[in-house]
Length: 233
Image (cartoon, rainbow, N blue to C red; front, side, top):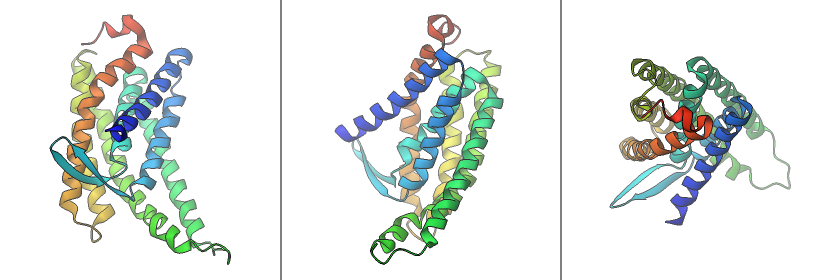
């Protein structure tokens, strides 16, 4: 039980720190930095397939499923405060950073190891998967994150800024579904059975998406205070 609690505490703490930063400085750069960090970490830790016990249900999914799912909460926070244009800019920044990361990881992988360093095979077995996972993530990321931003903005305009839970849910859930199908298919086709991974990711991401709703309200309260919270439900 301690393990998922630590995940939730860690992710929540950092997102709230970003919200406090926005409230104090009225700038998105701290949350953008956290967003990019979460995205880049996801490319590396997705090389491990984890087992998650969700009550009576046990699913398998890449270990990055929890941290990556929260990136949609961060895009929604930026969208809520700064609008769709700033959200697309953040997605583009993360896209460039992923390309840079995979290039330098590949460069380090093909660099000849020193005779005294015996871990080249272990390095390749883990980091060698990162370029393929990143390529899969780049396609899924660009499609799903921009879809999330568009849907969030659409529901925000249609509801005139009310019903935060609606735009948070109805933007994240479709985007998470698109991301799962694209990412799992490209990253693990021919390597692992796809259906269990797709099912595991969707179940876990939907659960995270639902859990993130109260955190979205809490982050909004941190950014705007009671006055800002009164305009939404």
